Length: 275
Image (cartoon, rainbow, N blue to C red; front, side, top):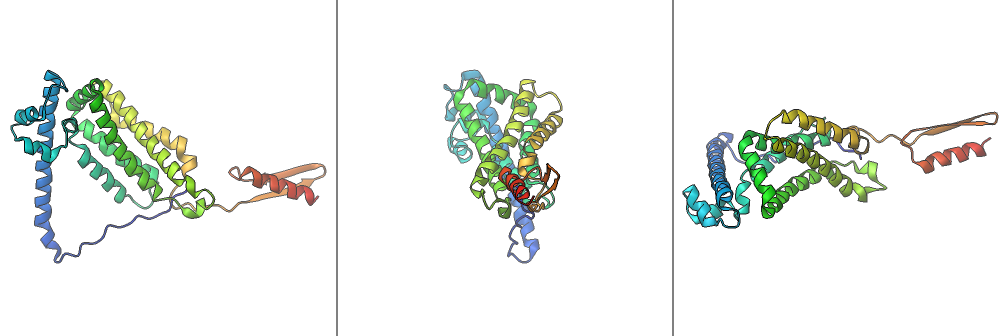
């Protein structure tokens, strides 16, 4: 699995002069911060009610009232009450995508994806007590567990698209149909490693050096998938090479370790014919 070098650059803004963007950017940042603050307040209210009344017995109206807002405000931020305990995933997905888009050209795409999913871990680690409480709640309520799985799937799709976009088609002329499978498997491995470390950290009450644990898990992923994925984006496919010579009744052949078996056999057969 070889990858190509280079990243698509974001389109340049057509606005002039550039300074006119500053107020709009500041206003957008304030609006985003207010939106996230409201989503977190609604999430805190929902979690408190789920813990005291139970998930099934809690209504959207009660969550809105607990947060001190109207019902319509709740639905401006969440489509359902189960979404209310995952207030940060939308923004985290945006940050993860930004990591992919800003990746340096020399970085291996799999390393880029590992850095991207660290944004998810940062989200959980920023508020350990809430993350632990949410974890316990999702273990008890199947509907919430399903909503959490749906959120994880969004990250997998993002990373799969990214990895697939960096295949070197010249190196896969014969098996290009496998590219989607390879990209999905690699993306899934990164997400699975992250989730394994995250669950272990949450079960421990949010204690421990989760970043070091995550780096260790990613090292295992790279060790396992590194050969199949390739050494880096700039790696050029090596031409097939095999040589043979004869010494008396002994046939000596030399071939690359990654050469296909049929190629090695053809080399041996050719050497035998030339004896």
